[in-house]
Image (tube, rainbow, N blue to C red; front, side, top):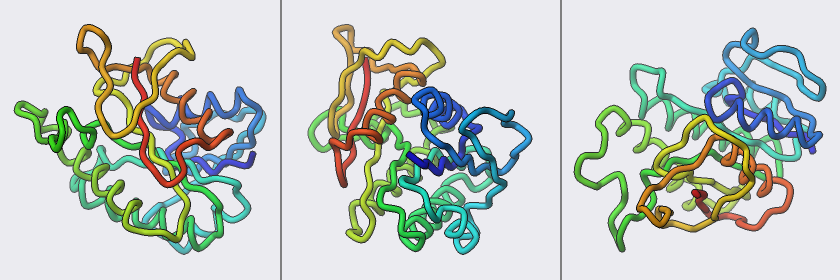
Length: 212
């Protein structure tokens, strides 16, 4: 497939890039700093500003799917930048006529009990709140529209550099934990779950989750 990958040089984006190229897909990486990505077979790299929705629309044309690993965590106004960027990505994907939008979501919007989100739990780290609120808003934006086909994948509470095992569980809107109550997934296995969904859609117009 022809994949337009936004945020391909980031923590999760780079894992998605590796997995997509390993599977033989053609990837157009849209990044703010193209020099971070070395030339590879199947990869083209373009400098992109997600806030410029008109220019982004042209960059997305011809893609089979947009895969967004966009993040605003490095910005001063994390929430504002994330939401503005996500809105621009959604608008550009729709305007470019790309059939599907896959989005890297967060764990904070998952339920830890009926009606209780991880985001609202006591002791949720303040340094992650703005990013978590942004990801929650992105999910709400997707659910409130019907023009663009989408899927959002939320990781476990802890996502870390590790191994690609290909062995994990998929869930829905509730936080997944193992027998010891630990919720975690390697970024490599997160990428496997996302590319599996990209190749064989099983969660159209919904959020799903992944954890060990």
